[in-house]
Every structure is written in structure tokens, then in C-alpha cells.
View 1 (spheres, rainbow, N blue to C red):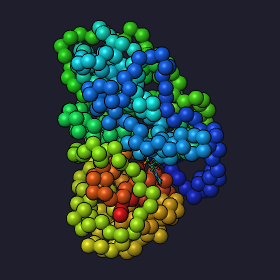
View 2: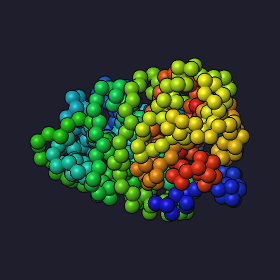
View 3: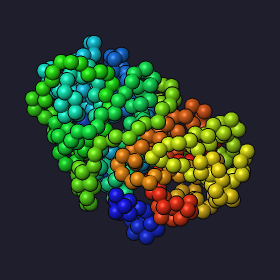
View 4: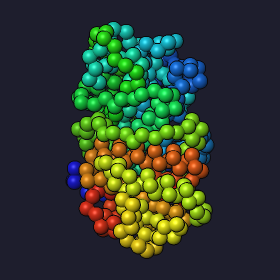
Length: 405
Ligand SMILES: Cc1cc2nc3c(=O)[nH]c(=O)nc-3n(C[C@H](O)[C@H](O)[C@H](O)COP(=O)(O)O)c2cc1C
């Protein structure tokens, strides 16, 4: 995967060449909508579906000019949301068994196709009917490629990791066990879901239990609906994604609350004051724990109970104030100067799987800091090679997070 890492790396030269100008009028649509004639459950209509609403919902509605600018409970690089979420529901009291699309922007869960003797089970490696919900997460790369070019490969999978942890949060709040399904052919699943070459499944999650009743493959693939109003891909992102497997790694356990999930936001500025010592110690402790396949390098920007410097596995590896150097490494994002800590997540392995893992890990941190009223944001823009040199590691730089008051 080294070539994809290099291909999607940021350098000063690439940033300068991109020119920074974006014609927002050409932005592809951010949300997929199935036709209006399909049956739907509006959000709030059925208690049994509440868990799906918590997985993916709009939590802020604004307009920029004539365009709606929605933010979701999951963060997204550039707020472009190159993801979609579907659920097969079977044997849930009061709900028609079928395959649904979670249309977050329209606050509804749309029935794409009813199921009975057939279902999505055989396409996700199950041989019997599954009672409960099977969630299918997909990536729509053009939504992100449109702005970020090849770097979008990373942003799609980091976003996907956030979405996975968001499902985990909803399952935890709803007291349900979840299982990651993998080991089957994503291509077969993509076809069954009615995806063409603009949308690719990236993770499958099961909430419920497999029965002993036999099940048939879907009688016909789901209706195809384009996930964007147009697609003008310039690179090889769709080819890369078509070859990727589905998420197989582990998720990191955490406990959270509904209000924390619904009020999650990315910090856009930091006050520059300090979080409480207890909170700081707890966060530093989490960041030094084993998070295989990931590792964290945490830069304490300002002296507090700890000396300023770079910390790895609980030990200081480089003392000093690195605020200016780090700001430059984060593509001159000056707002991080007032953060208290910046954590760089690395991994020996660079793959869609390890990127999703990094996204999920950061999501857990979003919710943990959110619960403590600490500002937090994911940062996907950094100069990869320079950051590796700064940290003195050859491991891949996956993601960066900043936290502070
Ligand atoms: C993968 C990823 C990369 C991001 N990169 C940056 C970044 O480089 N700089 C930044 O200020 N925010 C970054 N963000 C935060 C997004 O801008 C933010 O999630 C988005 O604007 C939506 O706002 P919300 O998180 O408050 O819902 C990133 C978020 C994600 C998920």
C-alpha cells in the first residue's frame, strides 16, 4: 500500500499546485435520495428504528447562500459526507421487513425493497435468516474527490471509521451487541445493493442474531439510484475502492450518552486555557494505551502538569515547545495554536482497514472529550513525510486530532 500512501500524501508542492480555489457551484450532491414514491418511516415514527436515527442524523441545519449546509452527528473532512448507510431489517416488531436507506438529510428511513424468503444475508456471508438489523455502510468517493483529489481516498475511509464508531455509540446507548461481518466478496454485495461504479460498500455490521431458517439470495438487486447528481471522477479512486475489502479490524470500546452523540461538533477555535488536570491526565492515559494497529504521538503544546513536548507510550521523547512547527506541519492551520494537545495517529499498516480504525479511534475521542466539554477536532490535512521526520518514525501518518478548551 506504500504507493497509495505516497500517491495520497500532501506536500507543499501539491498544496501550492492545487491553487486553493473551489467553485462551490460545481459541488456534487451530498446526500442520496431514493424516489419519493417509496414507503418511508419518518424519524421518530417508530421506537424500534431510533437506533438507526442515532447512527446517522442531521444535528445542525444552516444555509450558505441558497445552499443548505447540514452537519451530522458524524464529522466529515470538508463536511462533504462521502458515505451512505443502509439497513436490512427482519423480524422487528411493527416494522416491515425489508432493506432500507437511512436518508439523514430528509429525516426518514426509506424502504427500498421488501424481503421475505430472500434477503441480503447470503451476500454478507450468512447462510440463515438474520433477525434484527444488518447495516451496510458505503463510500461515495466523488463527493470528496471533487474537492480533495486523490487525498479523498484517505478522507473517505477516515469518515467511514467515524461512521462505524457512531453505529457503535448508537448500539451501546441502545444496549445492543454488534458484530462486524467480513470475509465475503464485497463485489457481490455491491451488485446486490444496486451500486454501480460510484458507490462501494466498506463495512457491514450485524445487530441481532442468526436464526436456523434458510434464506434465499435477493430475488433481484436493489433499485439503482445514483448517489450524486453527477460524477466526473478524474483519478483512479473508484478502481482502488472497488479492490478494497471490507472493514475487519476491531473497534475500541467506549461508553457514551445520547446527548453527547447529538451535540458532537468539531472545535473551530480554542480559547487557549487549560482543561482540568483530571481530564488532561485521563486523556493522556487513553492516548498512551495500546490501540493496535495504531500508535499515538501526543504533542503537549503548552506546559501544564506535564512539560511541553512529544509523548509516546507515556514517555516524553522530545521536549520543547513545538506549536509553530506543528502548525506548519498541519498545512498552516493556525487555529490549533491555542489547543492544549495535538495527537498524531500512526500505523505500520496503511490500508482502508487501518484508516477506518483511525477514524473510529478518533470518534471515540470526540465523544469522550465532548462529554467533558473539551473542544476536539479531527485533522486530515498534514504534510506526511515532514510529520514522519518530526516524530522520528517511518510509520504512516493516518490522522491528527487536536484537543483543548
Ligand atoms: C477525516 C476528517 C478530516 C478533517 N480534517 C480537518 C482539517 O484538516 N482541519 C479542520 O479544521 N477540520 C477538519 N475536520 C473537521 C471537519 O471540518 C468537520 O467535521 C466538518 O466541518 C463538519 O463539522 P462537525 O464535525 O462539527 O459536524 C476533519 C474531519 C474529518 C472527519
